[in-house]
Image (cartoon, rainbow, N blue to C red; front, side, top):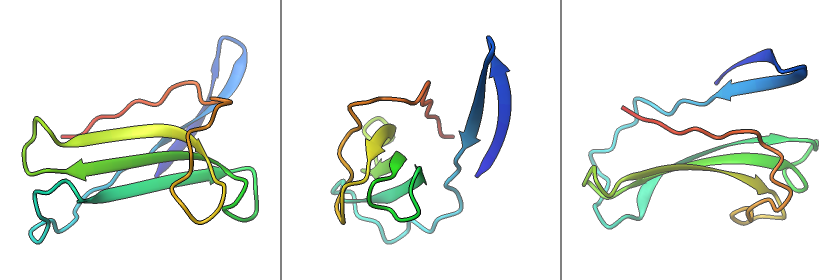
Length: 97
């Protein structure tokens, strides 16, 4: 993860760059059940109650069907965090090469 702060039109912001790379995928299946996820939480000393940016790569062994998506989520226990209805992230951009 890399991060930096900047001022966008008089509003201080922080930008994070999350990278997932150099993973051995040779044993992954093409059923769409393999992949990676990575999250970054804010606002709490424990996971529950944290505001989260959650990124996930879903592997199908077909580049036109593979997906890399990031969402604004809110941790509410030991489960996939639900989407955050407050939506207090300014932008989530995804790309992979």
